[in-house]
Image 1: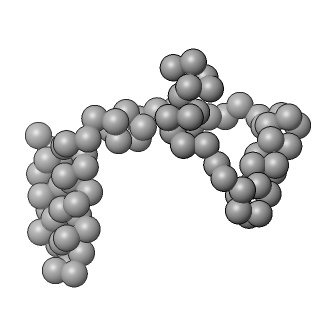
Image 2 (image 1 turned 180 degrees about the vertical axis):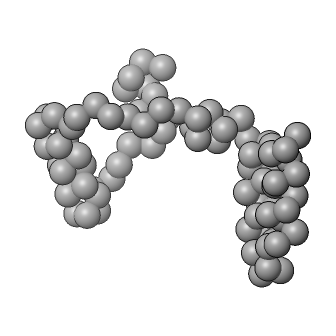
Length: 81
């Protein structure tokens, strides 16, 4: 209960200009379970391998050149999902 009291104190101290942003953030926390799970996920600390780095560079270069990227449906089909 102490945490909720502390939260109320923070909200009471917010300048009026920050109230909309705080409200939007709190709505996300209470409504979006995907966002909550992403926020709680551990940081990926696996080192980037040379193949990963090269693939990321190639993808970035393709995007900069304006090449067509896969849609989410095409990617799912390619992955067999």
